[in-house]
Image 1 (cartoon, rainbow, N blue to C red):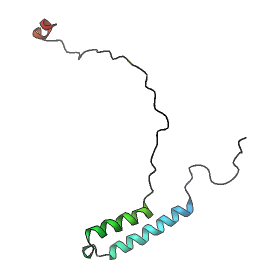
Image 2 (image 1 turned 120 degrees about the vertical axis):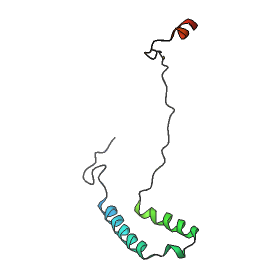
Image 3 (image 1 turned 45 degrees about the horizontal axis):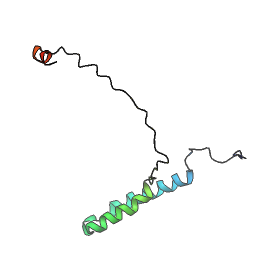
Length: 94
């Protein structure tokens, strides 16, 4: 028995709290990056810092899994030619 959904967010509507929180974190990070002296950091630390902070600003991608193999229908290929008349030498070969 399927229960009908009543109230709440409509499917696909963005979450306002998450949106506002991400905007606030992005603003803080932008201000922090302006004050940060990247020259003092080692390359490893720069990469680590950026990768950790991106999790708060960019959405995470989900992996997609193919549940059942796709069935391919057989097809025929019909060669219609190039539309260019063959030269006498090409015509003689056939």
